[in-house]
Amino acid sequence: MYSINQKFFKKLNDKLFYGWIIVGIGSLGIFASGAGQSHTFSPFIPVISKDLKISSTSITTAYMIATLFAAFLLPKIGKLVDKYGPRLVLIFTTILLGIGCMIFGAATNFLMLAIAFGFLRFFGQGSLMLGSANIITQWFDKKRGFALGLMGLGFAISMGLHPPISDFLISNYGWRQAWVIIGFSTWIIMLPPLIFLAINKPEDVNILPDGKKHDNLEKKQKTKIFGLTLNEALKEKSFYILSFSFFSISTLVTALHFFQVTILSQYFNMPSSSAASLFIPTMITMIIFIPIVGKMLDKFKTENIIGLALLVTTASLISITFATSPTFAIIYAIIFGINNAFNLSLFGYIWPRYFGRLHVGSIQGTGQMVLVVGASIGAMPFAAAMDLGYDLVVTIRLSALYPFLSAFLCFFFLRQSKKLSEMQKL
Image (cartoon, rainbow, N blue to C red; front, side, top):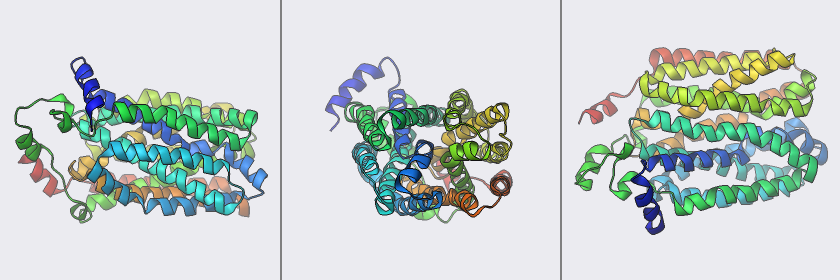
């Protein structure tokens, strides 16, 4: 199964811990997930709306229905990751994501658009991110926060490159051909490293997370790999506080990604190309802050970092409503970059941190289902406000109350379960 991969492992692991190669693969996976992320859709929305003669609300409805459908399949993917390992799941996910891109480019009506959104959201924003986070989680323990933070660099680069590249492809090849190009590039980026370099977990090559070695692998595995089952996790208060809090992030950050170009161009008279280019300072900010957040996760209490992340989400929502000039728009882009640095670092970190590593695929799949449901409906209030003539600025500011309340819950009520603490002491 790992004949070629093990040859690379033996050559590279003597020079550096192979887990850092896995971090690179995970980062590529997060970058490639951009094909199913809201920031990539942002430049396409006005063009598709005009070409297919579909309103923003109709496009958002297609997006919502498809994402909801995809969300409820994610627990199945989590179980497949636990059963077959993230490598195999990631290979098939990448293949199907590329096909989804081509289906999107062929969409001619609401139904085809909804189906295409379903492919992209399920295999991109859902499965590819889940598998990428899972494979890195397996390879790290003490440095897990830093490793998952580095994984988030893939998202930062995607946010900075996918919108302007998409805008360029739309202008030069049309929006349909643009999706064909995105699909092929996804295969080229992801399939070679997954096939030839990826290894599910360090125990498969007789080492432990963080590169530690041991003589008796079977005995060490039994004492080292621990964690709650999905049913046990669902009985913990921490699962519901995390789900409630990250639902707010998923909902509102998705709305900002999805409608950033529309908000800034239609409401603040910024050229669409300039609005799309704001993802670049956001990307740069993410690249700077992601390693910092990763170090913070390894050093400080997780619940405090989550609470801080939610306050930054609140600030992102408020700041875009003041982006009436280039200066304030850049300030928003920087705050949004810090926001995404926190969110991407926390994305894969929270589930093994609060529930252990043994069944993390199933738990993460269920948790991510909640987050993707949030992502599916997040853009709808903004779309409704725009189409029905409500004050969009007031809508955005009111929505900022949700992550603010969630921060309060995390600061004062989010704690690790006693059962996991007891497992760690054994």
